[in-house]
Structure formats: C-alpha cells, structure tokens
Image (cartoon, rainbow, N blue to C red; front, side):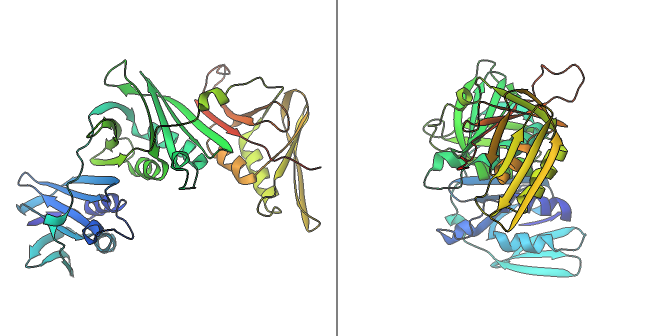
Length: 378
C-alpha cells in the first residue's frame, strides 16, 4: 500500500474516524484504525467498537492500493502535529510509514484479518440540511440523562412523520425538544427511535458546514441501526430501546402566567446570580407585571438580587430553578426574546423562543424546553 494525501484533508478524516475508538478496547484490534486505498484514488479511514462505526473518505494519489490496520489514537496524534505539507503513507514490512516533509514515523501494524467487518450503512430514509440538523441536536442534548443504568434517558428520541422530524431528550427533570422539516425519501415515512445522545451530538457537530445530511435506518434483523452521513463522512450506531415517555403531551398545557423578556440580559443575570449559589442551590425568579427579580443566596455567606424588565400576562409568580438547567434551556433560544409559561410555582415551566421577525408572533421556531422548578421551603 502506498499513497499521498493532503495533510489537512487527512487530519480531518483521521479525527472523524478516531471519534469511535474505545479508550479501553475489549479486543486489541478495536484500538486500530482501518486505512484503505483503492486504485481509483479513494482513501477510506474507519473506526469501529461494535456499537458505533465512523468512516471518512478523501481523495488521494494512490501508487499501490491496499489496506492496513494501525493504532488509531496514535495515528491521530501524529497527523495532527505534522507540518503543512503533503503526507506519504506506505507499508514497509510490519510497519506503516508516515512521511511528511522532514518528519517520518513508523507504526507497527495490527492484524487486519482479525478486524471485525464494519456494518453497512442503512438504507437512506431522507435528508436534512447539515447546519439545521447540528443546531437541533445541540439544542436538545443538554437535557439527556447521564445515568447509564437508565439507558433510554441517555438517548435522543427521534420521531418522524412524513416531512416533520422531532428530536427530544429528557433526564426526568426537564425535556428539550425541537421540531424541524426534513426531506423523506418516502412522503409517508414514519419512525420512532432512540439514538445514544453522545454519539449523535459528536456526529452532528463534526459534519462539515453546508453539507447535506443523509439519515438511514435499518440493519440486520430490523431497524437496529441509524446511519448519518454527509460531506464524505458517515457513521452508524446501534439504537437504544425505543420505549420513551410521551414528551409531546407534556409540552402543552394551560398556563396561568406568561412572561416575555430579553434573552441575553436574562442569561447574564442568571450567570451572575449563580456565582453565589452552591451545588443544589436554586435561583429564584419573581415575575410581576413589568419586571422579573432574580435572586440567589448561600446561607448568610453571600446573596444576589437583580431586576430586569419583563412583560407578564396573568398571575404574579415566584419560581425557583437550578441555574444550570435554566442556562441549558436558554442556550437553545436563538432569538432576542424568550417566553416563559407556567401554571404556578410547583408546576413545570416552558421556555420557547419569540420570533424576531416583525409580524411573526404566531410563527414557531420549533424549540421547546420544559423544566421542573425546585420546591421552596420558605
């Protein structure tokens, strides 16, 4: 095997494939990255841990086609630190040699014949603009659970009905959901799946800007895999159990208080109030007709108190929330104004974005963030 490739293109491709490499592989070969070149000038780099696979394809000048398995994380470190010159990679005996300008590295190859067969990407179900998909995933994943003993809560629920896609995450204390429009291959297509949140977040973040993302579902024995690809990058992941709460029903309700305020000043006020909170200490929000008062305290040691303009329709309300939960929800608001709706201090509150365009009050950005308040003893 022998080929030459652009250094930056190689670095991007290796970084993508290295994302799936396990830090403590069950088998030594799973720490390897598969490097394969064909006679028609295509270089493929791949990683696989039996749960998630990642492939990246780039063009290369191929002298001799072939495939080799090399230590993946080490290759990623080497390529990231190479000088900005073309990279030559070739096999020599039991080594894969990486040469770039004056720098040369020799990597002992792993037995490629022991490497498991990578899963084939599932059949394409539809496409969505990559930037839109990445933004939607980033809005919901902060609400995903971190407790691996409840795997369902560590995933992103994806519901598809024709041209409408919903993404949602919950850790039982909050729900983040985003509705968006995509282009299904079959206008009548429907699906409901749960994808590991960390995997989907890493994938969406790494898809090249401007690329169209293709989403596929399928796999041996039924709908066991999701495939996401775009811009020469692709990944597959096993799905989690598709049991999930009826999150859509919880995002609607009868609200007795509706407050509207400027997003950025409110975020900054929450951050300032959080400076005097200890772990588990909430930030209090007291909404009245024309303002919201943001308060926090840690015993007698420190306190914060700040008032901001706000417009309240309905009953005055005094709420308390985890400051981080509030900030996670507000991070998903991409407009200058935010709406908070609630039905009292002990019921969940709903954060949504108010569209910036004039005359667009009835339009919808598709983002919902429902968060439970902290019960106050006084």
